[in-house]
Image (cartoon, rainbow, N blue to C red; front, side, top):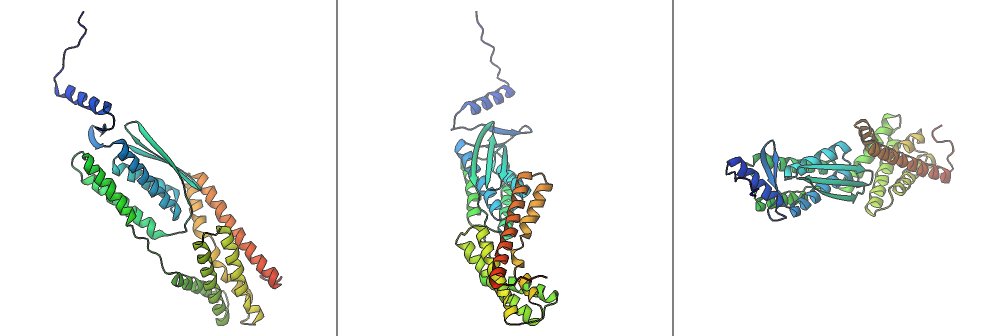
Length: 311
């Protein structure tokens, strides 16, 4: 008995057969990704690995330099889709990022640890520019990219991240302006010029101390304790040198640089946008920074025997 079906040479049948051959071919001819009936990408397993590494690198940079969770997830997903994968899933915790890229039912997952590097909005903006450039290239393509063209797109994005500007102000300039801000706060709160001058010096030295310890990778809580101690000791010079009318203002203003404003704002933003784990983690980190500053202040006041500060 002949059970073979008649051969269908129609265009639709040929298209379906071609798609089946592409799907069954392992590694050399990758499957074509369809979106609303239009083929948009053709990616090998090795190319998907490279895209996964680029996406996790983007997420880590955003996390390290203070990006809020919603921005981290959004930009990471947009970058993966722009480079050709079907989708990106990203899970965040306070010290790690879990990321999965999806393409034709094929998943690649990676988990990386992240370390807080301090706030740098310039880097956050530059990462967003890299993602926008990748999306513009995808929007400009008129046909499915060949394997070489896909490699070039991935390589160009990798190079853009490597050459991304990482502008930072010189340490002395940043410390000077931090000291000036503390001095202005002291003056606005009733301190005279000697009080403001002492606050300027205390804020400058405290900021330089903080930057020096951070550059040598000390524990962030230890850094805050030592910085608060230095700022308090220098601000308390107004008591012993009898400078100005109210030394309490100098002591209080000298430690303003340790207020964790940005982490608290990020924590509240994460909680309100549904990233509860990240929000609670950042809130606890900011709380511990505040407690560390209090420890440094109390140690300095005890050593200097100033029990009446702030009263």
